[in-house]
Amino acid sequence: MIRRSIFIVALGLQAAAAAAQTTTPAPAPTQPAPNTSAPAKPGTTLEKFEARREKAFMRADTDGDGKVSLAEWTAFQAQRKAKGDPAKSFARMDANKDGFVDKSELDAFLAKRFARLDKNNDGVLSADERPGHKTAPNQEQ
Image (cartoon, rainbow, N blue to C red; front, top):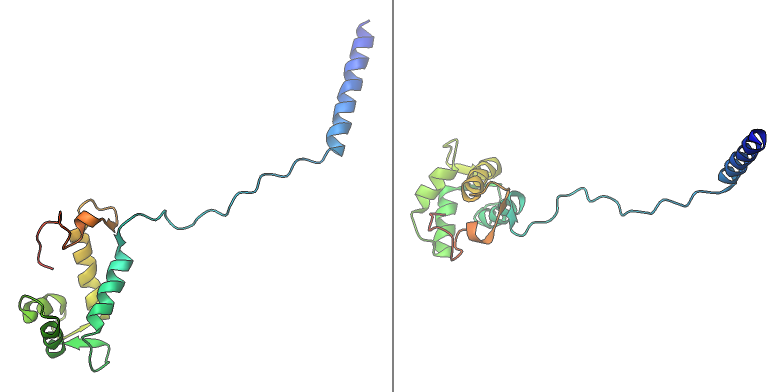
């Protein structure tokens, strides 16, 4: 009787092994490719902040040399009817004090400004952190 039980169990195992070998496994469910970028957060990232400000700033480069002089900046600010002293704002951007603001100086200035505005340090300026928003603190831009 024990031999018969062992024989039946062995026969069942053989049948299961044979079935497993002939059965093709079901294909794995396809998953969309992982999104390599971070999920989009509402607000302005440093890259967007710099790109927008740089585009506006470089409109002041009237001679097209890739840098903005104090005279160009002053004329641009007058055209925009900007408040404040253009010489003071220019001096804050002109890190090497050569009388011109180039892209590297502008990027450094904007990165510092972004960090100062990003109160919660999440890398995104939300609506209430952006200057000019009704809930934003009144800061000099």
